Image 1 (cartoon, rainbow, N blue to C red):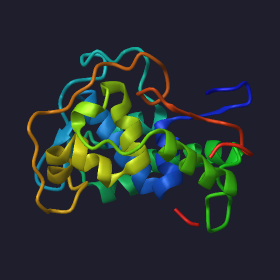
Image 2 (cartoon, helix red, strand yellow):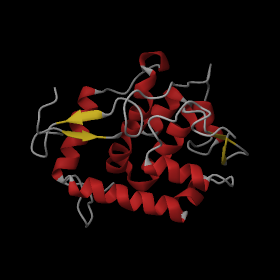
Image 3 (spheres, helix red, strand yellow):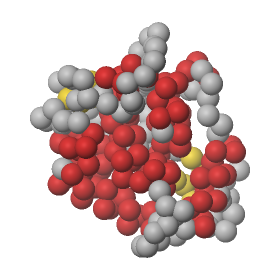
Length: 206
């Protein structure tokens, strides 16, 4: 239940808390893929699909800053390690980190998660268990699931794309049909977002 004092954590913020910059960028890549903007290129590489967010029906709401930075970086095909050092992506990550710190979820020194951040992740996982099957995940909840569970969610939702794009290690991955979602109804980074109570009730290093 959301109260007036609640803090709304967007998916990229959840990913940053869970796994640091790599997790946040990986979540942005999956978000763009589900929007139809990014696809896998050569093994371990990502590229834009040739469709703009507007052409893909994503004009409203606009792409979040990190997703826009990743899309810009992928004007030339790249792998996840290259995205992490791209200047535009680094600037967007720095802004994301500032926002999460200002909410009291992160600290300057390792372990970066504050107690409030650890409690937030714990509470979110209790409220939103890892889905066992793709059919159990409403389209708007796909990106939040990846943000919260990382590779475990990729295996469920977009295993083939994740494998080809270098987001998953090359292991036994199967997939039946592509998983795509419609434009999100709300703002932020897509999906329903996850809610938790304030710093004292919501609930290491990355």
